[in-house]
Image (tube, rainbow, N blue to C red):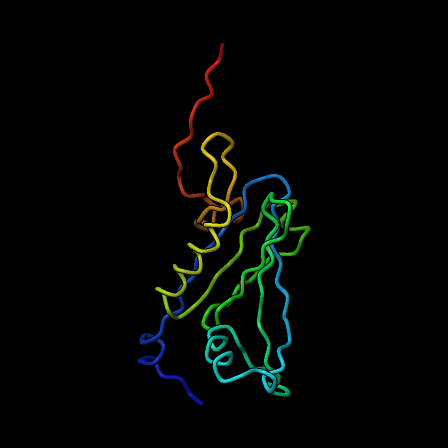
Amino acid sequence: MISTEAESTKNPLHYLNLRFMGVGFRGYIIKKIVNVHKLSKEQKKLASRWLDKSEHDGTSFIRVLILKLGQSALTAYPIPVGVTVYCPTDQQQQADNQPLLLTSTDYKLLTSVASEIKSYKIPDVYKGSGVFLCERLETEKGEQYLNETTLRKVIKKK
C-alpha cells in the first residue's frame, strides 16, 4: 500500500513527552492477554477502548502502564488503543531521567491520556516533584528536555 502525501498530511503524528521528577519515580509497560471469548457483550463494549489485537496470532491484549510515583502501591493505567507509549529502560530513567514518549494521530485523545497520567502525581509546589510535560531540544551537547514551569513556594525560615 503506497501512501500519498495527501494521506500523510491528513493524519499527522502528534507526540508529548512526560517526565518523572522525584526520587524513585519509574514507569514500565506490560501486556496482559485477555480471553475475549469469556467476556459478555457489555464487557466487550466497555473494554473496546483498551483491547488491542496481535497481528501474528490474533490474540487480544491490553497494554498497561505501571507507574511507581512515590505511593505505597503501584499505579496501573490501561493505555487506549490509539495511543502508543515508548518507555525508556529502568537504567535510562535512573541515570538520564529520560521521559516517556506518547504518540498518537488523535491529539485530543493524546492530551487526555497525558492529563490522566499527570493526575496520578500532581507537581508538589515545595519539592518540585511530580509528573511534568516537557519539550525535547536538540543542542550541540545532545538532547535536552525543558519541563513545564510551575510556581514554587519558598519555605519560611525562622
